[in-house]
Image 1: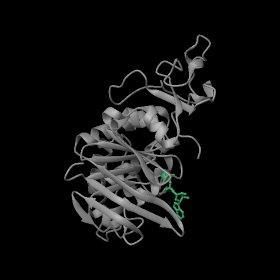
Image 2 (image 1 turned 90 degrees about the vertical axis):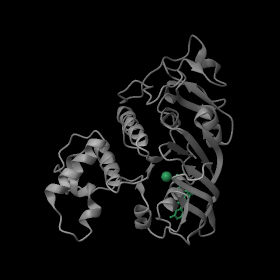
Image 3 (image 1 turned 90 degrees about the horizontal axis):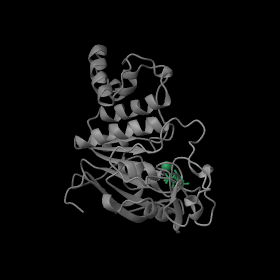
Length: 316
Ligand SMILES: Nc1ncnc2c1ncn2[C@@H]1O[C@H](COP(=O)(O)OP(=O)(O)O)[C@@H](O)[C@H]1O
Ligand SMILES: [Mg+2]
């Protein structure tokens, strides 16, 4: 733990009615780092993020939220934004009939000040450049792809010059290629000092991208890993709560990391990209070992091409 992480939550407990979904969660995010937050569906990731971003306001949970070392009370999303916490929610939320600039600078539009369209386009252009987007600021959002919309949401968060950027499952609607490109963008942003909390249930993205990770299961932190401890085995076992098998597919399914003897035999299925997938399987944003895991399955399950899709957590 450092003295002044960009963001820290300590001992957060959150209930909905009689159901407690966060049971004493602590986590911290260093400036200039990308930290993965993992867990199966329903583990509590989005709920935790909503506490960090004022969506679930102070008073609706117990525990401490600190920004830059100071304890804060986030009663609404605006409080979090003002403190430099940018948030891109899981659901893409754009206004189709408005332009890119209008969507990105929506905060300025709502301020009541006269909207200088040309200045706004220039500001938007700068933000788009940061994300490697070449589209014109006056493009209607209705013509944008899912990936462009995702980047647009990130541009909107960056428009507030945050110190922390929280991305909830940002690759849900991206292809592998687009997800890798996003990874490069995020590394560049982190290099500027931004702390990035990257929520996902995809293990491989965390291995490729993150400097550390926290794994939630059933509302509790079950693993906190530094960069040197990040392995598919540890993440997947923590997510599932039991020993599971992970299969490498750096050059296809050619080796089993654990409990997967069939994958190493001569008759092991050859690597195949899932239908519709467009990229090579292991393009890392940072140098990694060749054992970039692409799939996993509970111990005892068969190792088949069907399991060679992007590394995902088991269904709850
Ligand atoms: N607004 C809500 N009201 C009631 N239950 C909720 C609400 N939001 C989340 N939950 C429940 O809290 C648990 C954790 O959900 P969530 O934080 O969305 O998990 P994750 O993002 O890890 O998939 C789930 O059981 C979910 O059904
Ligand atoms: Mg979620």
